[in-house]
Amino acid sequence: MKRLAIIFGCLVTAVVVYAPVALAQQSSVDGYGGGAGGIQSEVESGGGAGGSLPFTGLDLGLLIGGGLVLLAVGFGLRRLARGNAS
Image 1 (cartoon, rainbow, N blue to C red):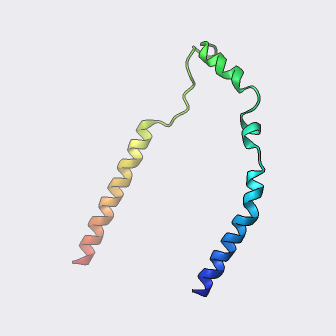
Image 2: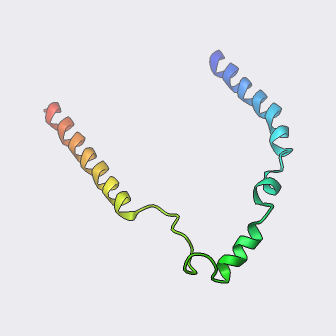
Image 3: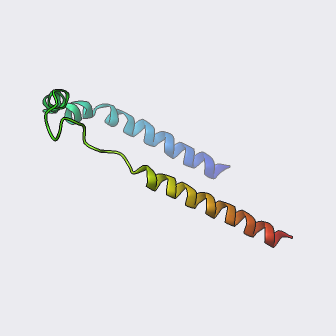
């Protein structure tokens, strides 16, 4: 219990020390300021490559395949564990 109190105290101290530093940052100005408005108006007007937005997502086939592999491994482990238990 004493160990948990020490860990909790360290976490609270870290939050108290680092919270003002995090609030003093102006990442919104640094990250979003600049030429973003010009790029947005170019995309809206149909400029760029073919007048469409670039592909920025993942391939759905890879996601479905990965999900199926995870399901197969899960069912296989379940069947293996059930076979060893009896």
